[in-house]
Amino acid sequence: MNNYIPLPHPSFLEKLNLHLTLPGLKAKYPRSHRHNYLAVINWFNRPVSAVSQPLLSHKIEISKGYSQSFYHLIEIQDWEKASIILIEDLT
Image (cartoon, rainbow, N blue to C red; front, side, top):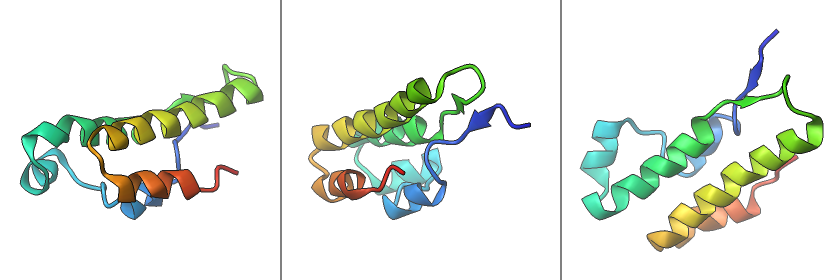
């Protein structure tokens, strides 16, 4: 049994056009924005334990990833990617 559930579906980073490696980020985005994009990628790639947490706590952790990623995108005023997070269905 898998102890971790990825957050969220891997194709979500493709919707945000952030399915890049670190060299890809360096080539595409200015240095001043890179750490925010990297933070978004990290929030969506971190595993969330489904075994050690009750269901409500697990859902809170998932929504925390979305809210933290949204915060990083509005910090650099990437409204298009931030709006994708807002309209994403969390169910």
